[in-house]
Image: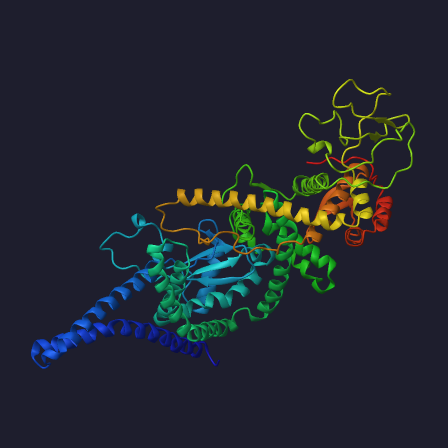
Length: 621
């Protein structure tokens, strides 16, 4: 387009087309009433004969029905609350420098400044109209009667929170220039009216889709059909209008930091990649355990710095870190980061809106011990619970041990000590129902046989405690039983699904309590009423993926307990195993060899190299 004015004119033309659709709908609703008025007026003046009486009454009845239906549609559209992007509002007091930057930018662009600024946990920025009554303050806080009509407000500028921590001040200004330039076309009355009409119809469709009783459901379904019909009629015009508005804003921002904007756009793609990895690999494991990282935006800087170190395509991006970051425009960046991190957990995982005993924050320094180590031990414990409930399967005979009872039963995975029936759990860890072998601290191994159900204990030497959960048991079962892998994978999937259902029920109960507590509040945070999370990060994992994750967790627990390894955090890959201070990233292939092919050779070789003793018991949660 030749100039910003050309784009605005094109957008206005499409906006008028949308408004003509609204006018046509009004005319159709008023047409029966107009016909009835003409018929009754003609009969009253004598211009129509007595034969028109029936037609007049039919037209009058149709007019009443039409006006009632039109009033119903109008009331629902007017009262429906348009969708509002979840965000963290930023007051001018908490970010005076940021507001000053945006206003200076609007002055350079010769457009109205945004009415407010908000942050969202996403790698995007946009303008959002929040002039609907439901998005304003409560009625008691509005302007008093007689104070005049409320002046039209400019849209709110919504900025992706990762941008503030990764981008420099100059880059952020260049990136926001075309976004802020959009306030010019947004202030046009015709464009604003067309947008309000489209958003009202969209909100009415959402209202009609809610589950309600039969008495209210039938009228709402009618409103939903009418709203969808009008949306289909105006979809093309609205789409072209928004494209023209965006083109006009981009054209107006051409002369403001154009060269720097090219560099800033490169940073957008990099920030998106780092944000996605941070959420899916680092934050998601913590969310699943009831912990939420409280400095996600600060973690983006570490993740992207690590990406710059590994990827030569991103080489040089980390050198910008010496310049002033955009988060310095905030008075309390830590508090804003905490609020944005909590909102991200609610959006992408469905966590509660407020911290609690089972939903507490965790810092990056505590992440390895409080998230990584606990995650491994929880998954290892779940794996052993599944193995405990498998049918007893005899393993190949082990080499005879000194003092072993030749008539002893083979080891099984049924009834391990953590899940033995009440009243029959042995004093020390070990299988119940058969003899156990345990190497004592010094001296040859000893055996013990459980006493019979009735009568005194059997004669024989005193026995040592049997071993607890070990990695060797898991490897032997998966390697020597062809059906064990599929069976364990299926049961792990069922176990995880059951736990997720229980967690979803708890989240729903918390959501109902929060909704009950907010009765009477006319404005909210824009969260979807159909439930959370709005944007699930990952599809459900398959049984084989779950089995590989749990076996990996068991191996890591054994490495920590027997080889001196430590849990760590990799900014791009999440939980990591550190051996002698260095990350071991070569564990995945040996585990997959065991899980997929039943070949334990590569994993045993890896354990030998690291110094892990699989026969030693591990500590579980």
